[in-house]
Amino acid sequence: MSTRDLYVQDPGDPVWKVPASGAARFSWDYDDGRDRLLALYQKGKDKQWDATLRIDWDLEVDPQDPLGTPDESMSLYGTRYWDKMTEKDRGDLRRHYTSWQFSQFLHGEQGAMVCAARIVESVPDLDAKFYSATQTMDEARHAEIYGRFLQEKIGMLYPINDNLQSLLSDTLKDSRWDMPYLGMQVLIEGLALAAFGMIRDTTTKPLPKQILAYVMQDEARHVAFGRMALRDYYKQLTDAELREREEFVIEGCYLMRDRLRGLEVLENFGIPPKEAAEFTENSEFLHLFRKLLFSRIVPCVKDIGLWGERLQRAYVDMGVFEMGDSNLDLLMAEDEELAEKLDAERFAAEEEARTAEVAAAIAQGAAND
Image 1 (spheres, rainbow, N blue to C red):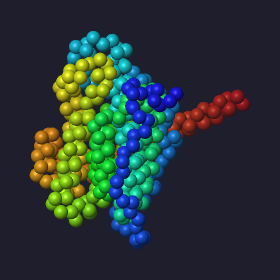
Image 2: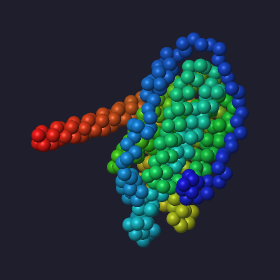
Image 3: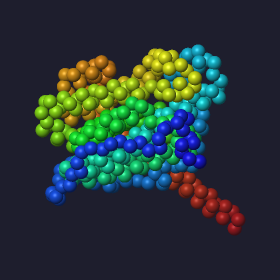
Image 4: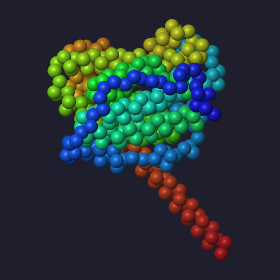
């Protein structure tokens, strides 16, 4: 079956063409480069993994309850529409919400792959090109994983959200070499990490937990890469140049905040657009989710040197200003540790099962003797 047959809404033209501008930059300086960035490049090489082998794709997923998250997480909960729904209707709604969320993850990962390739092309420093090449592979793996999960386990996809597509377009069209870093590494990746983390920590289902934990292990390196590169570069910019980038961040953050409502799902269930918007705005769970989504972005923006008065006011307006003091390094370290812990638990259980199987076979052989 074609992927296009799984879309609940027409995704439009099968190929989205974004006009590219800017220069491809070669560097003839083959010196060692920056120690921190080369260490991250080495880590990127060491941490490559095969999604076919590391993830247990044999795990079953119930399409009517793919994540096991509480009913309160759906913005229709508590409304008259929810009260009229049968259990099957509510299962369909859970399936659609999961499809919408993971479809945006999938489209975002393809965007990240294209942006990482653009960084390889346009960044002037060879050490940054080296690392971006490993990230391009990481993002390809993530797109592979989310695509497989949606096709094989959920059986349904949603088109890319308009606001995410707009931010990707703005990021890719800009001719300045640092903009794919800022748009992708800081904004879209930061948003994705927070969204992945909230689902990873609340899902009761083993397959999505594996997927999100392992993807987040990679993404922690990507955000670290963006911070290193932009922190060094932005120290050299004029106040006017910094303001231009702050304007881009402000617009991008508002776009992403408004993107995270899943109105497409509610409208697909026949909810009038105005009511759908009201339900999402009144959802306590969505308010918490929205706030947590900026837990990775705000401290990163502050860390790289974009912290002008207008940007601070925007974060106050969004209710996330205090997150500028969050310990981003600690959050990233926890992401890596959780993936390693999950690996250790899985492989220990598998080893125990194999040992028991061997012991049973030996006992059976002795009994037959």
